[in-house]
Length: 379
Image (cartoon, rainbow, N blue to C red; front, side, top):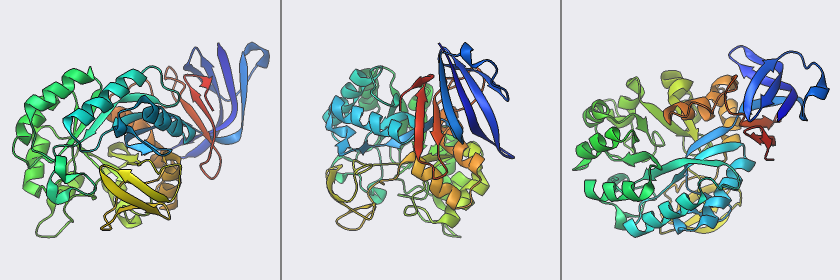
């Protein structure tokens, strides 16, 4: 099966350029300036000179379309998979919130049933956000289930997950965290710090031990102070530590987004949604993580005013980032190539010969026109 995707724009460091893409058996076979004999192709897609990007990857998403993936049903995971695809996200990590072990295992079992049978975006694994988080920086995490790192519990989780755990967020200052970091690192799992009250010194120690990623940087962690710089400063300073950013005009001021980009560059900064079930639905009242959540004007908050995840989509995050003066090429990289690299996914996240043809066509407002999964038209 050979497909020609013609008259598209591809982003580069010096701007966009016109091109045509030839896809064969789900892989990008050729990127060319000329089309040739169109009768040679089984399918022809007219790009109308719109922007073509790799499929985006969301390493941190909880729900969408009224569905919370912690409810333990395959339906909820499928709904998120479908919504991700509609918004240009072709791969994602099913992300937990702090819960009982029983509820977490139910989510894992549901995820296992959906993997390989997704109705939309592909599941790339599971991201455990908790339960080993600091209650002082709990955010919307349910304090009833927060606990210290427990190796025996984690090994039970790993046994049930059959290799699906790809990322774990913990507070590295908690008792037992050092042993947990060492274990997760030995299992080739991305160890992220989040919902943490770690000092600068505790953060440096955690990085030395194997923490390489920061969950929703700046949120649910100490503010930067010139005499107590905390984990945020340590992460910005430390090469090799990548950071997540919720770019929705709510969680991060544009100046902070630009600073994070300037310091970390697009190579170590990833866009995430951290979305709850209100994504794609709108304002209203929701139950999320054991809390009542009110969404007003797209902003989700607990009853006490605490931010509770977001409603932004990946394509919206692209637009907001460029509106904040982040270069287009870097913005695309933060949503595609960099998260793929963090997860060691070598066949996705790039428009290059030999890579999977997971591709998204966007208009000038970053609205999704079409999505291809391994060369097949999915939207």
